[in-house]
View (cartoon, rainbow, N blue to C red):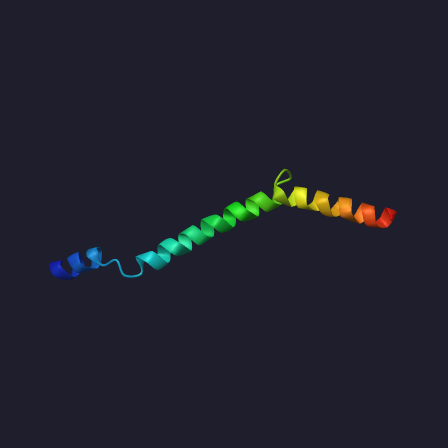
Length: 59
């Protein structure tokens, strides 16, 4: 029984997949936050597209 517990605690199989999953989740949170905040990249991209729309409409 003790050897089974020791083997279980030393087993690292699958740990890499979990770590990559956590990293992907954190990157997703950072990207969503950067895009949706009022001063983030999403607002800047919207401003650029609004300028393009205004220029096309005025042409």
